[in-house]
Length: 276
Image (tube, rainbow, N blue to C red; front, side):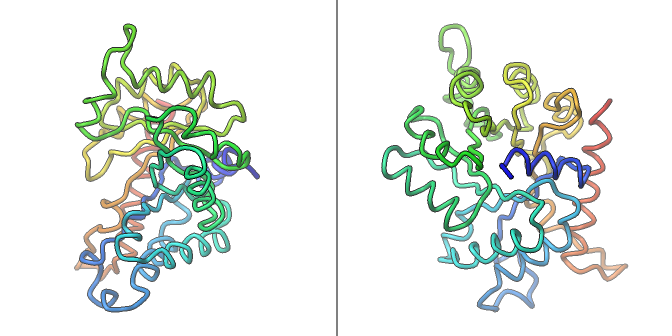
């Protein structure tokens, strides 16, 4: 099953466009987990078990693991997802952007070592930096296009032949790079007008949409701008708002139960606007 097939199946089976980001910060963990040697794995496992039926994908951010030399725990988390929740795609958020043999090794890292279904990549060095990922025809390459951070406009909104640069990226990916039908684009929820423009340009290509939750993107505006005619086509990511949801002291919620509550609320909020 290809990444696109797996993602489409998850959209349908879970009735969800919610992507849960895994950005583990030990300082924010519950006290009983912080001193465990496998704290990151244990935390992420509980989050996954609590939210798996609400998600169309999981997006582990590699920096949170690599900074603590916890790549072995990332491997274990990806293995746990593949074995326990094989329907849900894994998107490795690595934003790789090198070329040649180095890019080939980054592709092996993502797809062999971690077994990811897709990886985020940076197009700044051109097609050379994307091509090694496309050799893995059953996996996905999700290309940075219009990112959710304010500084993204420094380059992405530069006028090139009458169009902002991010639109050139979208057109390149849609018209030339997506020869195997395995590409997606990263377009932030914080820019719904640009999100709508990208959707118009790329048809039904999947869009990874960060920026709701802690970054303040508007759910309604994002869904209505980025959905396909079938009401799908998006992986709307929320990380911190779900991972570190405050438990309700009155009900005695655990951190995982609080994460599930917020994930369900987010999924339902998204679904309200999929066909409106």
